[in-house]
Length: 390
Picture 1: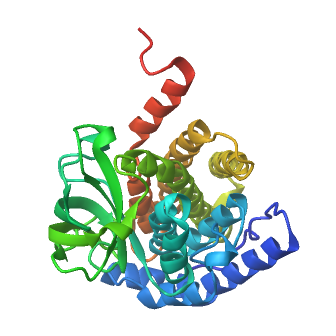
Picture 2: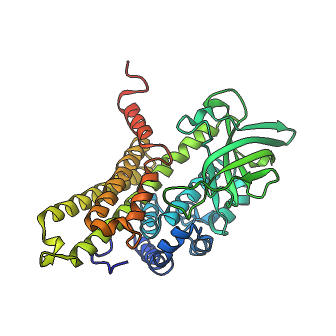
Picture 3: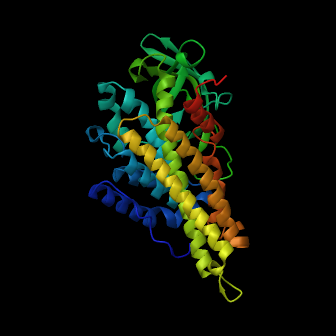
C-alpha cells in the first residue's frame, strides 16, 4: 500500500476519552489489521484472533453500559471507531457492527437477570455474535419468516433455516427471530441461542464477490431446544425488537461504508500525486482534480449525515428516518467513490496489486445488507408521506 499522503480524518469528538479511543483504534488498525488485509481477504481467512484482540481492548461493547462490560460510549464515537476499522479491513469493521447488532436485543429488551447472566461475556468476554432475521424466502419481507419456535414446557423448540448470516457457523451466540404465533409481524419472538446448541448447524459459506474473509452462511435449526429464560422480550415482540436493532445497525453500515470510501480516496490521492504522465503528476490535471474533489465532498457529506443521526440517537430522539438516509447515502457514496478510485488508477486499479479493486467489490454488498437501498427509500418515503399516500 502506498504511503498515505492524506492526513488521518480530523474528527470532531466529544471528549478526551474519545480522542484517546480513536488513537488506540488507529494504532491497532495500522499494526494489526491493514498490513494483512489484502492477503487474508484473498485467502478467505476470518481473523478470529483480531476479534479476540478487539474484545480484550474493550472494542466489542462500546455502545453498551459499563455495568455489563461495555464501553458506555455514545453512538457518535462508536460509529467513528467502526469507520476506522472498516477503512483498514471491512471484514473487521462490519464484523464489529454485526456483533453489536447481535447484542442489541438482549441489552435493550432483556430482563435484568438476563443482562447480568449473559452480557458480560457477550460484550467483553471474547464471544462473537450473529444476527438471524433473514431467510431463503424472506429477505426484504422479513415479517414473513417461517422459522418456527414451538413451546414444549419450559423450553422452545426451533426449526427452520436462516440465510445470509454474517458469522454463520463460527458465532458463539445467535440472536434469532422465530415465529411463535400468527402470520405477520405480531407472531414473531426473539431468542438468544448458544452457538453450540444441539441441532444447530451451518451450511458452507457463500462464495461472495467481496468480503471473502467474512463467512456468510445459512444456519439450520433442527429441533434446537432453547430454555424459556433465553427468550428475549415478550412473545410476539420479536419483530419490533428486530426493527429497533436494524435502525442502529444501519448506522453501523453507513459508518463502515464511509470507512471504505475514505480508504479508496486515500489510495487514489496517493497514486495521483505519485504517478507521472506527460512530464508531471497526474494530480496536476484538472479533470482528475475535480474527480478527487467530488469523491472527498461526498465522503464528508456522508460522514456528517451518519453523525447527525447518531447524535439524535444519543439524545434519545427518533432517528429511524435519518438512519435510513445515512445508510442509503453512505453506501451509494462508497460504491461511487470506489469505482472512481479504480478509474483514477487506470489499469492498475483493475489489478489486485492495489486495494481499490477490493474496495469496489466490497462496497457493493453495503448497498444490500441490513435492508437494500430500495428498502431505505421506502422507509424514508413512509416518514415523509405515510404508509400509503393514496
